Length: 372
Ligand SMILES: CC(C)(COP(=O)(O)OP(=O)(O)OC[C@H]1O[C@@H](n2cnc3c(N)ncnc32)[C@H](O)[C@@H]1OP(=O)(O)O)[C@@H](O)C(=O)NCCC(=O)NCCS
Image (cartoon, rainbow, N blue to C red; front, top):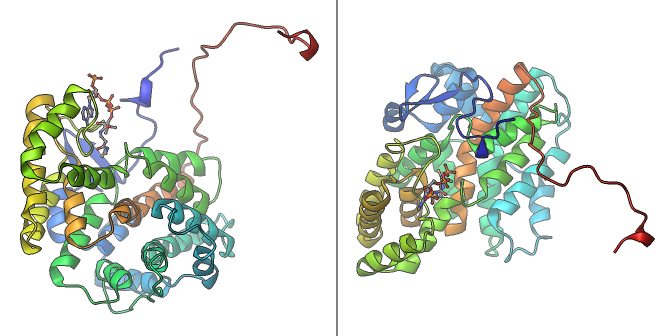
């Protein structure tokens, strides 16, 4: 047996959804740079699920389906009130709420292709509503119902704040959603595929994926970056703080990647956004500190920033609570998870690798009264 730790370099499936080749990320053959500059998140959802960009009617239909399905069942809202809400991380709340949604979906266990597509719409539509509602309920505020005439990105901000957002905020959230939507066989997408390859249901697949995204080595890194920026506090502190961490062989959150070697192509888009937004909010030090961290970490360790590094200061500048950063990643990545789940069902085989056994050799059972 050859053991490949962390499955590095192992090709576990074929997929037509996204690719990372020579540090270039594409969704269905479209370069991420092109999509980040030009596409709406709704177009990306359609692209990932249908493997083509939508025409005008197809996009209008998808938008309509999303807005018609965005409202949450009262049972989910009531459930928030039973949580120890001040202690619950929003990713844990999201994971539980998605699982709960499955209980109220009559089609949860209907495995036909059409039914699975309808569940994909419902889940994509409801994820931002869950995040926004939870964020308000824990502050003692009423959840806000989605507005039908707003874009996906604008609606999310509206449900979070109760105000129609500024165009720059909508642009930033739309870009972030586009950039995070899919990423080949990343840990949470693999988790979703492993789950549904047992022919388990869509809700189980997405619940498992949220659990995998929550960890700081994956989606949880953006919140960890903001925590680090706050700990550092000033531009002067960057140098001793980062060098100290490197000397102690601690990881710097928001750097490094399993697949990219020369840099994550998504990071530069968020870097530009971070500069723009931190200037606008009068807090350019978050951007300046980030740039200084980048220059030390790339200089010392040759590790470029990943998607999570500059997204932290972008979300902070939009006034978003720091623990909502990873849930926003999930609101976007659910589009990719769902695309991969539908692809897995269409050509399924159980995913079941092996482990090389390293425990003791053959032993004989000893009755308890004869054990030491
Ligand atoms: C993304 C990540 C999990 C990839 O992990 P991986 O491919 O398993 O790589 P490893 O963790 O084995 O790291 C390989 C080497 O680079 C170093 N390294 C990797 N990321 C590092 C980081 N962020 N800071 C400092 N050193 C890092 C490791 O310490 C290790 O060094 P060593 O060989 O001297 O022990 C890893 O880079 C990381 O933990 N990054 C920080 C968390 C993060 O930003 N996650 C979001 C990813 S989009």
